[in-house]
Image: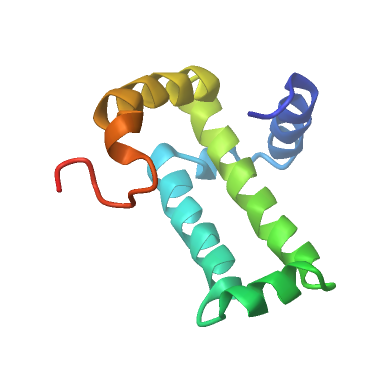
Length: 114
């Protein structure tokens, strides 16, 4: 997900502050939900047109910052518990390909078992 140099910089930032002690898997997972909620809050109750205007305004930076917070926490979590996020995504993609074959899922937003 992140380049090796970006991940190295993140890990060094955390190490210099001795924050590893606070970044246990449960705490990182909880923080991820908080940051995802903060991202959602930027879009909540807005129409598609309002979201488009938001993304074309100075508030786009807030969206980028919330996405960065999510990426940072997810990167710490994956690093700390030894999950290769790229491999995990590809594995999940293969499973989703089986659940959602193109001929049944094309243009259809229903869940695979509906």
